[in-house]
Every structure is written in C-alpha cells, then in structure tokens.
Image (cartoon, rainbow, N blue to C red; front, side, top):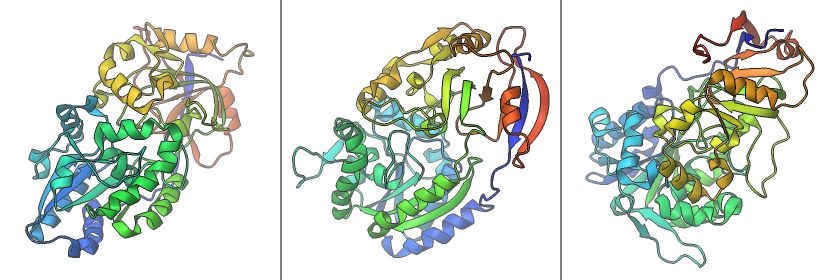
Length: 413
C-alpha cells in the first residue's frame, strides 16, 4: 500500500436543511411580537461561533423588531474571545458578516460589565453593560453538544446567558470552578439572570451533519429550561462522525474558533483533555496531526493541545496573547500546549505515523479530514476502506489519490 495515496470517500447524511431561512425565522419571531414594545431598545446577543446563516438570522430578527417600533442593536456575547477586548470581539463578529453595514443595526461592543446584586457568595454574576442598560435582550445561538462536558444544558442559550453576556469576568468566575462550574453552576446562575427580567427570549439554531441550518426555534425565557434540552438532543442526533471508531493517524487540514469553540470538536476526535473529566470511549485515535489555523480564528489556536503534531504554517499563525487569554480564562491549560512542530505537511504526516508505534505493513489506519465540522468528504487508507465496505451511506469518489505536491505539502482537499 502506498501510504501517500488515499481513497476519497463521501459520507451521506440526512438531507434535512431548511430551504428558506428568512421565512422560518420570521415564522418563529412572530411568536415573540408581544414582547417588543414601541420605542424599546433590544439587545441582540451574538456569540463567536461560525454559525451558518447567522447574519441572515440576525438581519431578519432586527428587521422585525424595527417593524414593531423597537430599536435593535447587537452585542458580542462571547466571554473572553476576541482577545478579551471590545475591538477584538467586534472584529470576530465582522468576520462572520455581522456589522452595522451588513445587518443595518449598530454593534455595541464593550468588556465592561454590571454586577448583578443578590447573588450568594462565592458566586458572582455579571452582565454586559449595554445589555443591562437595554429594555431587553434576545439571545441568539446555536445549540449543540459541548466540547468540555456533557449534561442537560451544553452549548446554547443557557450558557450564553451566563458566560457570553458576562464577558471575561463571568467566564473567569465560572471556569475557576472547572467542569463543575460549566455543568452545575451555569444552570443555577442562569435562573438568577432570568429572574432579573432582562432576557426576553432566545432564538435557538440547530445544524445538521452538513453544517446547515435545520431548525430555528424562538423560545420565551420561561420555557428555555424545558425546551433547550430537546433541541440539544436533536443536535446530537444529527451530528456528523468519523466512519470508524479506531484510527492510527488522523490528519486535520484546519482547526479554528469558527469550526469549534475549542478549535477541534472533542466530540469528533474523542479527546477532551480536562483533568477530572473522563475521556470518551470512542473514537480511539492514536495520533492527530493538524495542518493549519483558519483566518477567522484571528490567531486564537485554543485547542491546539488536543493534537500531537502541527505544521510550522499553523504555528506561525498563533497569536499567543489571544490564545492564552482564552485558555487561561477556561483554566484548561492542556489545550493551549503546543505540540511537535513539523516543517511541512509531509513531515507532519510522517512524524505522526511514526509515532503510532509498530504498525503492520498495509494495516495503517489513516483518515484525512478538512476539519471537524465537515465530515461528508474525507480521504481514507485501504484498511479503513475495507471496514466500511458495504455501507450504503459511503460513496467512493476517487481511488489512489496522491496526497502531496512538490513542496511536500498536502494537495488541496
């Protein structure tokens, strides 16, 4: 077997994306019409994830609020992301097409917060100053399995209400309690936030295995604790996955904050790397090599420590201040450790394969993916191909594809 030639395959997942996003958003937001009072300033809380159709969703919601006589504006709700600066968080949103020019409503970014009163020690509760001074906040976020823990509430509206709206101060306060803070304290503190009356509602988005919007749901605040877990289950059922559970070498073309909050989705690679948190039973991957960092990450390579080998190309893109701000705030330092740095893609591949330990010739189990968000197409070695033979959801696209060019870098995906 030529280890530098792999077979390109396509995984076929459920085709269940929405065909008219604006129509679906409008249908849902109408349910919240009674909450929009004439003249009211409404803060639209938006996070730092690469969510499909997010700009269109925000534009439609903002337009509806204007029609009802309200005055909408956007606030970044992203904890310590964007280097924990107001300008950095605005830049993150703009990279996703979320700006006043593109959405028609102003973006008000600040790291200043207001501390909410009446919270029992040792907990403290903060809220973005612009959100707090508004007449009401609508949370807008994708709901999906979290990369740090699993529970009734993971990545979504409840978490955004606490960590996102609370900026770096709240993110630091919650993460100081480790996984307990994420899984236990967030729901408890969210109840306190909701009792303030500042949160009007949430707009939950769920994506399918193709990273496409499959569901939009407007949820009143009093129903969030009941309905968000249902959307989380839907998201979990529609996640993509690798076609096999055992891999010697996984090559990931790119990682980034727009792909996953931790750069590489831990649900896909079976690695969490948090002290006290059990590692997933599957998949089992011996070595992970990552080749590049997305431009949309603005140098924040949080999660790079989940891999074993990276390229110099990726290393040179790391903004250590941005990454360390995020990693230190989370307190999960393992994820900010820099792996072995290879000079090019071929060296990363060979270093990774050599580090798998003894492998019988022609039994090397290799997979190359674009990133952990897009798993519909990938390259696999013959032993992996043998395992998935007969799977009706797998289509062979091209056999014996050469991986490297003359510069010893991987050919484009």
